[in-house]
Image 1 (cartoon, one colour):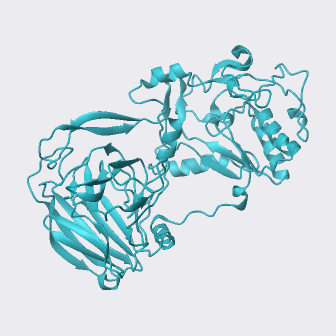
Image 2 (image 1 turned 180 degrees about the vertical axis):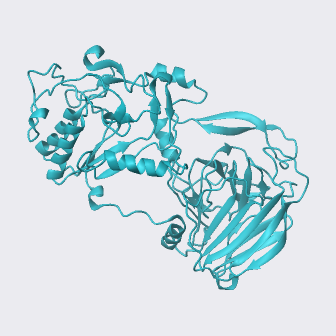
Image 3 (image 1 turned 90 degrees about the horizontal axis):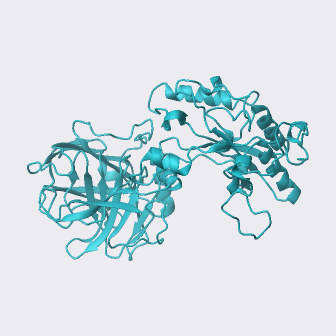
Length: 527
């Protein structure tokens, strides 16, 4: 669901008054959706006319804003001057062609245009503020692809042509004179809080992709908006700004696709690939090749939230074997962990090491989730590492090396990097503290128990113990209402099968006296 408010829109240009129109300001998402939306994955959009198979590929990033379209307008945009030729393209200046109106942010007076023919099949176009104040994705995050294979304009498979005032440009495939990217549809807008670049499309285009969604494979081309966060879309627009991509057809403007960014620069890569496969290959040369997956990673895996202790993990692993069901890899999510250590009562490190050893002895694998956030429990707030701080990388690598040491820690085979940036568990405009309390966050820990039944193949510490001070509670899940029905095909009740006080401990997850300055290994645990 999307939250909408009204704001003046520019139907006759960003400096003209217009009737208020609805603007989307923030997608309402739950935790799972936010996690997916903030993952740093890349997606392609393939565009082809009805007449040709050869695609042009677009790869936008991150999204946010408007439902409404902008019509053809009197806004003059920018004028180009000062062209300076280089061995692999040219540089030029762009100056605002009329007085600034400063609606939706301050107009940037002076811009810099850089055109580079990186390879025979790749063209790089970058439009940035001349002062280089606007945020750009650091090279440490997205390394600039090598231009060692740069060519002259004459040797490129792509042609860049432009109009000086108002500035616009086209990218043309020389082989068949097909226009791949055409911006005269509307003038360039470049402000400190809003950027817009609109391109003309052929009638009734075939458009696919634009990130993960549940819409039809072939996207609608009339009044259609895709909102994305921390994503990339190609012609490959490299940006970490919130943006939305608008696809529409009107009588006045014809068929078009429009990029709308909240901030940053326009850093575009154009790929000539004559087939989808070649485009994907050229795209990976810009963004980097994917890591090769281990063969066992394609096997049968078991993962779920809610395992209450090490007995649950061991019993699941054994039950797969007893049932004759192949199990390549066992996963454990947040149930086991504090920060860079395990729950000392429910997942003591010695017991975790034993079931990991069991998995490895049976040629199976183990993966755990790692969340970097540290909760300051009494204030219900969370601290995240500053990943751009020069000391964070070394600190985090050292923490991983200690915790996942094969001899003294958890001998994992792979790691699930989870929530390395802030995610929102609340609905839009909810009070975070009140929402957390209403939902019972953070939840209480499951009560301690002894083994309810023998687990063949595991050591004595995993077996029933009549002298244990804790009862052999049979419930394997926490919270208890996550447990499956006792009988197959029986509808599960939403209520716990046992009184809550018998299944849940009273202490809250986390340490009441913890601060962000105390290392997890220094925290005291109850006896």
